[in-house]
Image 1 (cartoon, helix red, strand yellow):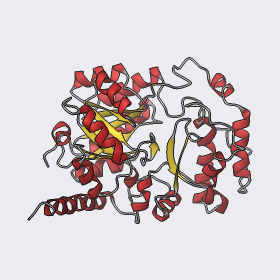
Image 2 (cartoon, one colour; image 1 turned 135 degrees about the horizontal axis):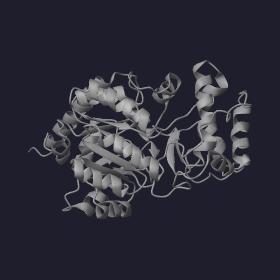
Image 3 (tube, one colour; image 1 turned 60 degrees about the horizontal axis):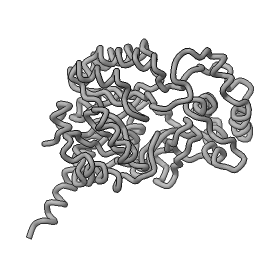
Length: 376
């Protein structure tokens, strides 16, 4: 295919796959797309292990890394002790989370006992620098930052190593700041996206940003609810140079997603997601369940700023998932995770290469359909 993204990343097809699973990264790149490892939650040491494994299995094909180094966060450096961070989380919030679990017959005595205190997987300044150094010590072709303008260190290292720096945006004004900062790729994510997302739909946001950056030389990857190749064709027609996808890889056979969550994804409709601050402190889209409903009720405490809300939600949800996998019915009902509205287009668990192949075929069919509309 002819696309600035293909040229920039050295791929055959401008399908970018964001995933937390290294196996999916490798399989997507081997199938002609571009795998990106979501590195949120990794330490420098564990990321080194993951990237070494990818290097050993990907056969020299291109791949990338995605980090979450927010522009604004309640904890911005590493000077806070675990005890200080714990003191920032009101007991009211943890009690409310425990109450939700108790209503579903789950023992809550130990849910926060072994929680890892810190930034909840989001990178504070010093940690971001260490993680970035690890990423650039490997042959990555792209590094992306979510939730704000990439740290200047990331931008400088990208130029030094010839690695494209991407940033996710959910509004035109965000795109303007990213272009001014010097990013190489914009990932324009509509509200349909899983995880952190804005409030403007993909169908509106993509052409709005493409029109704004026209002539800047900064290519756009469309994101948000994209599961089928026909949606990529529509995105290209709106000015994008490719697509950034996430939810569609959660139900692949290689994905490390809990089997219980995979089953719920396959059964879900596009209306069964909710956009809420109650998971991380910033708006993110996730599968609706009694857990998410409880946080949307009038009785719920207001979500804390990032990353403190994650210190309320992640430990209980980890226990919920573990119990659900063991057959606990109350936990199965509560089980939830990040996913976009495109979940309604997912109806089976398939291996990654099959997902890529069917996506490509659907794209070609859609392009042929559009070309046919121009014939006499």
